[in-house]
Length: 339
Ligand code: DAH
Image (tube, rainbow, N blue to C red; front, top):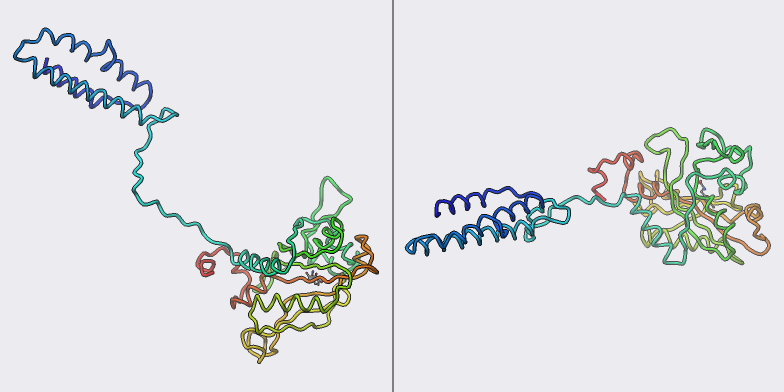
């Protein structure tokens, strides 16, 4: 009987259990009331007195072995019936790379933070925009050169032939959407992607980001505009940054200005970055044109407002001395990892 027990012991050890069915077979074969071991316990009474202690001890050992294997295997089989992996909770976690925010996203977040702190709300608009919002309502009539196919990506809708769509060429249409949906006073910024059908070079890309600003209330003046932009650029480029306006033209503002900041590299003395002028162009701005107010049913006699728009790639490239816009969108981690 001892040799039987040794054989059974080996069998128990090598019995394959990878599924609930196999576990049940194991139980039936060794542990159940009709199993091998129960049978051997009954046979124990036929064993001679001298042998009994040894055989009895062995039998108990083998029984314990079977039971403990059964319990271990049972615990290892999870709900799905497949075998769980042994997990060593003391092992250090596998490391993985989580990447980082793109440089332009970082700039966006920084700009938004500065404006939010002084009460601007963030709004959003679609990148695929109706021509009406992108041009008409912004006092940019049909013959205006800004609508030229060479700059604008037109998109033909197959379902709505009457409405012409464009990939928005600027974030200014969000001004219109905001003013149509809300009553003044309004103080919003709107960051996002814009698209222009440009030849890609070191300074032009077919997609870039702008941040639009709009403030409408009673008695808003150019002084408010200058104050808010001066505040922003001091925060963004440093306390010593000065700003100036240069007369310019945009269909949706009157008067319109180009915004320049004093060169933060040379402090205004003149260097390569500012082409020896001491100034850097950073955006466009102006007082909202009465025609724009009329297109959104706001009374220009009652309200005035300012608007501004700036390009994030340009601000970012100046800040970090990046010379080629394309590198921002080549997804080369050796470049992106630096920020
Ligand atoms: N939308 C203009 C552009 O893309 C930028 C701009 C200029 C926005 C003047 C404004 C503004 O809100 O007042 O070139």
